[in-house]
Length: 224
Figure (cartoon, rainbow, N blue to C red):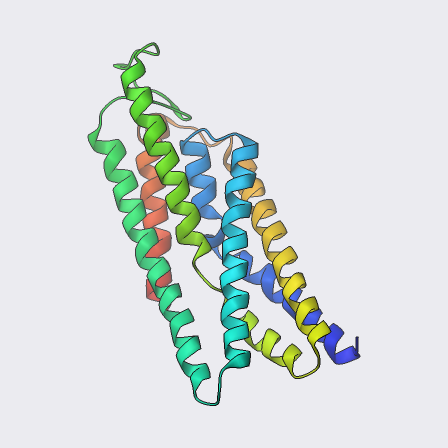
């Protein structure tokens, strides 16, 4: 591989690492993982699956730009930008629904404590919780995963001007850097918030998490 190719690979890795630090890539997983009492294994698996979807969509759009005829690149980039905007709306809606669900449904057991009017041996609220937990996890995986990284497009396009090996190297570098960094940052965030407790979080932890996720979505929309 040429020096230009190596420089593109390095640029791709740095781009992926910096891009992953944006809160919409990891904060929702931290909040829902804690609120839903996910195991570390489930947190890692869910984040990795979402990161993989994120990578596949980003690379697919980049390759579409490479293969597009002159003038079609703008349409492909427009699709990517629309998906990014859609992610902001979906996170906002997800956060509001998540917050509303826990505010309206009454007492429940959760990671932040237990409402005093709920009995631990009451199976019915826990059964509802299990169904909602599965739905919220799958929904969040989809929302974050289908948020492409537009910044990787020029990296792949530049690699295509060199040779196929460089394209493969850039794609693999982006995939590995993104997936690993999303998982690591999520685990670090989860560890960092593990000791945050208060009477407010004991009663309204899940609703508070939903509100923060909604704010992340709103921030994405305002950033445009």
